Amino acid sequence: MPPRKSKELTEQGARDAALRALARREHSAAELAYKLKQRGHADDVAQSVVDAVGEAGWQSDARYAEMLVRNRIEQGYGPLRIRAELQAAGVADTVAREALDAADIDWCERVRAVHQRRFSGPASSAKQWQQQYRFLAGRGFASEHIRMVLKGLSDFD
Image (cartoon, rainbow, N blue to C red):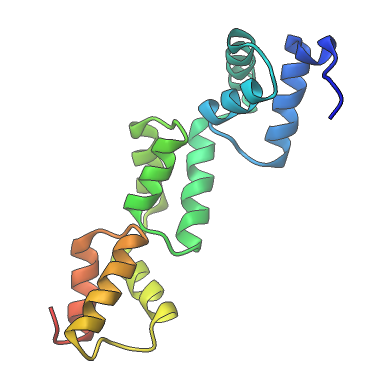
């Protein structure tokens, strides 16, 4: 890869890089700052650009959280996994909680749908029940929701 021109490492270059990244998909502020730093921009330049695009309304942690929550729910993930992913992306806990609450999801119904998609039917043994429980827990569903659904499907608990 050819060396970067000094012009590309200016604040304007960082702003252009941030806008290109945001044009592709939503990013959290922390994620965007990290990407700019990886491209060789100074920490203070990256932070000022992230602040500027946030103030202009081009970047929003709330929008990012809503997008991620919607996508992960469609992919069959539960609230614990989604919240952990938002936390890893640097989204504040209050913003993550608001995004999950705004989704207004019946988590028991989501557990049931994911279970139906993955397994052919209810567990016929304690071993299968444990396997199904572990799978759903790994997807990030709360144990109370998993138990409620699995108890309704089989006699094993």
